[in-house]
Image 1 (spheres, rainbow over the protein chains, first blue to last red):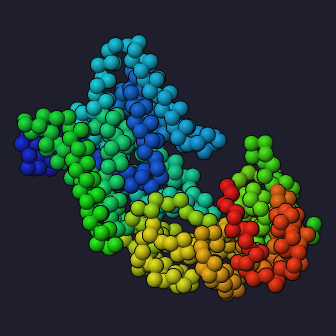
Image 2: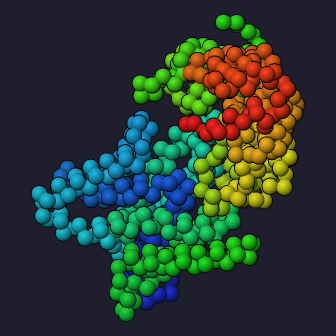
Image 3: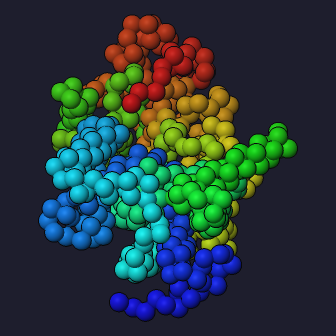
Length: 287
Length: 264
């Protein structure tokens, strides 16, 4: 495993009480890697109307862990791989089935949640982990997880460089993009795969219930604040990063003592309210 | 069927069936190269379906042969865009996303920006460059979509009811613009239209479609009372029994079309 101590040393310089603790350093590094990914992919999720898709993938987390435990595979590996498989299956079914896409997602959603619950109901020892998946715990991120996050982050940056424009084209209109010789299907599958992996990592951080919020709230705020698609990308990242860091800092304060994931989402919701105000003031000035 | 070396598209026994319902039945038609070919017909006649089959979006039996093969450069202008109107997405970005290598979050490159402006200039809409796509009116959006299609430097331009949702004057200007562009760029144009007045003035070839091809050829030969009655029914046939060239666009001839709505 590569030596990440320099990264944690960098995190320890962050001016916040408790940053000398290793788990806090790991949490901060994990958040700083996750937040830009969920934010930028969130812009595309909003553009593609794929919130329900990411919700379904997030809810497959528990089944992924359960299957890992049955097969004797480390849940930290089985969970992202299972989420990836669920994402690809949904995309595949959407393409080759006559059913509306939300019906397809609804069916897969039900199947993975039921599979997870079925396994849990047989085996009570896993049930204790259920809470971690519902609420997430960024403070339990291991060093191995962070290594994988770094790999994912590198893939993410490459993808955003090469695919951003093409995805925007495909999101505007699949028919126009295909007629104009953009390989829409390829980019959609790559996007779904990357999104599924990022969603699964986010489940560790903020929990199943709040994964979609990590994607949607920064993008929704950015939609109100930005004046261009490129600007929306940066605004989403700014909102997401500041919310993640502020959420972590607030949640460990003795007077707060709240779950980190929930605190992060609450901060980003404050951003959203501010963005609504800014956008309505701006519209009034123009109108 | 007449085999023509100057054909841009040959539809040969094209049939489309969806959920057991026949939408297109043995369509044989030829689109001459360099022509402005217009598909007309009542609602549910399969006009849009034929265009989608041409674009490869709908499965069909039979064959569609493109002069120049499958590598033919196609520009497509849809009827309208289902776009989130609140999305911050500028016209300059819209016209750069297909050509610029650099991701748009690093800004628009100088060359892409210049090219976008030149394209907008071609469709007489250079003033729209700084606007947001969501704030464009129907007619403005249509021009921007046309600019996006022209960016392909198309050999074949496919338009689905470009005059829907645009006022009469706007529709006329748009058709004149298309005529000019077709002559200067030398592409073949195939479009769906409900506006018979427009068809009479601008089309060089008409395909009358009602699941099958009722008639095809130059408008002055095809747009007669018998054909229009077969296409649109009794009422239309009576109106058009008069010579169609005497009726101005937008008057009685076009009137039944104004009641028509977009079909899927």
